[in-house]
Length: 102
Image (tube, rainbow, N blue to C red):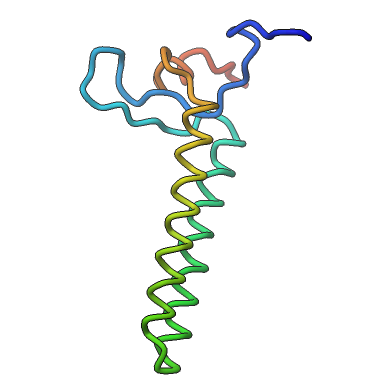
């Protein structure tokens, strides 16, 4: 069994604010992070479409339930990926500064 060093990890998200700040928010810094954000937005949109469709067919409770389920699943997935693939030390500004210019 091999273990990877922390420096070998590919981070998809980074802190918005430096360590010591009250906020622990993260932002995407890799295209895979942006793909995760797009997946979350897609879950919300699908839930909204289901809500609208069921609401238009007089089944509002089912629409609310499906939207809530889609938002919960998308949010849980987004948060879990952010925690696993988020850089706990470096900030978005650090990644922008270290990005090679073309």
